[in-house]
Image 1 (cartoon, rainbow, N blue to C red):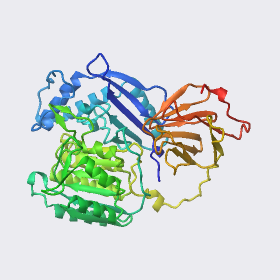
Image 2: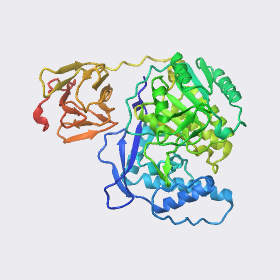
Image 3: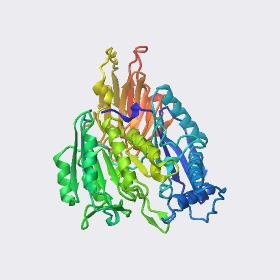
Image 4: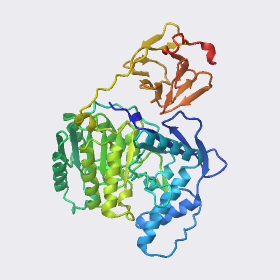
Length: 524
């Protein structure tokens, strides 16, 4: 399977400091970067002017909804210059986007982004940017509209950036092999608010026609109309579906929202997660209201209550849902463009960017349509639903030179009898017996870490819940979490805890055949 790390990736995390003397104190840091990182962290206070612009944005674009307040203190209304409603909406769309960018990407975080963007440009590839917003009261903000300055593209529209949201607390990702044909299950539930203006069955047939016209492999689309939960679960076991579409009524709730399969049966997010994660689904798309919105009480968002968050938390690879209600025309334009991009074998985050651009083209920049889709991706997922098109259609003019693999050793510093020798390009370490190296300790994740051998050397990638401690030669221990680090010979590794078993990593380079581990190199 293609690994997410093949695209340069930057993950930015933002969380509230609850023990701070300041009421609205946040910390922002780079949790995963495409370079060996130092400490890229910024302590910031919430910008009250940003709250004012956000409230004004809601008055223009969602006037019939209860306004969302990111902080509890009184907010002064923003002073808007006179002008037409159209010019005001365009100014608000850009103004809020610029202020959100400037608040999130400050100092060290801005430097990390610039460096990651430079690496992507140097590799002639796009940058995968993922935002982990952990304070639920900041989740309703439309981070997809962020832009560095007036006149620049929004981050979710930039073709050089694949933008998505993510969360850190996730179950391990378990994927079936990437295929060349696309199997789609379209579930038609109860129409929104009893609205029958949209003929769901005709919509489904239209989508099937789009899928079946694609030339890149066979596309199979099946339809379920208002099924029971048992019928849904049974259908998912009969075929290896990668894509799940739900069209129908939905609403926010504390257990991950609700979708209404029929007038008599609904599923909350946790129940749906149990069904979808067992079936091999790679992308779940919800053409329903509120799928990406947290449940709110007294204008305050409840943590981990949106459908998107709950599904990703339970291990689903990716979820696309709506921040606010989406019209029938907008939904059809989104699903049509998204389906076409996926059938072209593009990764999910790129496909969503293409669909978002189609919404902007059809409904214009000062309409909220292009801001509605919210994409969440599992931090371990590379977004590929089908095999990359290049691997199917392109014949190489020259056979690539095979990468020469080096032998390397992992040995336990606590038990001399435990030693592993490898010459593979990839080994997996974790608590599961299926791993190449099994460590049965309570703080070790089932699939905890990987050691990867590339042309430029060895790398350690953490995939765990609690992180990995790494001791590089002549350096103090450092913790990495959901990121990758260069791993030189004579390094040490502990999985999940300082109390864990210490593993020594070494290899013999061509330049120094006498390289060997010496425990005195590091205080262990």
